[in-house]
Length: 423
Image 1 (cartoon, rainbow, N blue to C red):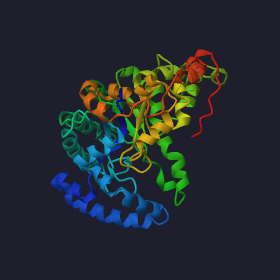
Image 2: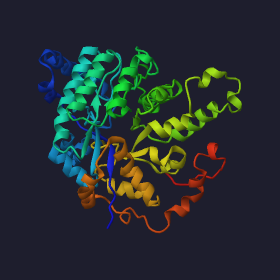
Image 3: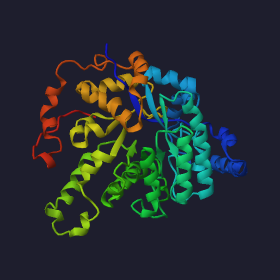
């Protein structure tokens, strides 16, 4: 019975906040104590009406033991085994409900350029040190992503990238999705970062979390509407500026932002590049730094960590690129598929061709992050879901043949009607 190799391209790990103290350089521990005091007071004020308290209590009560997998290595493996996940890419911030297991000084998913540079780097280093130890306990299975605040001091960022890689973190780096008040990512000041990541074959990530919260007030819906956009934004800065020409081996990954937006973005950028009607008035400056269409850079250099990939996204996978999609279970966050991943996979992939499922569930991530498929084979052969368990029977490709042939219609000239697939 052939089982799928499942690699989650989006998992999270982090110590309970206070336990990070021992991982910080001594010079920053007093500041950390004050940070925790202020943070607790702010959370108490901000939390009124922000969270669904009933859901949060139920979630933690039902999953108390499993949630310990956010920092406990043995428990983590047990939970991922039950989910059928053989390999994982690990981002910071294990607690997505109360933020009780987050990188020090806000260095994790919500980092921006407005945090004290010294504290931000100190928090990143503390998390990276701990994460390296977690990954060392199962190096074939765990690809840890180092937090690297690249905005303030590029030389220090490059040094931390090299140090983190030498410590065993091979999953790449996480950079702030928001660069304000520093220059945007097309600025050449960041070239040393792209260069070292290309040299060491480390993917560069942005991950949803940060947004311009000061503008939203109590209107949480504004944050929900915009938070993905902030992480999508660096993509077009890198593409249109020619960064992927200067660093053709650079890998760029957008994680936990969905994938629904990608097809329309690629379409709009490609037709602009090709001077379709609306772009005819634009001069040579539009494409001066580019040697390929935007979608061609995307295919070569970019991937989407499509956590909890939805049916509507899978229905457009040929426009997005089957080879650019990497599924994730978002363990141990409640917006992910854990602890019911097997059912989520069945609901989403039941009519997807096996070869495409193999790529999106594991092989794409194996290539991007350098997982050794042979070393993971015994584990995936024991815990991975089978095509039959996902409900994949018969000629699944037949249903999708027209869409597969159309690919990206703006490039092939073949139109095909999207299938009604629900959510």
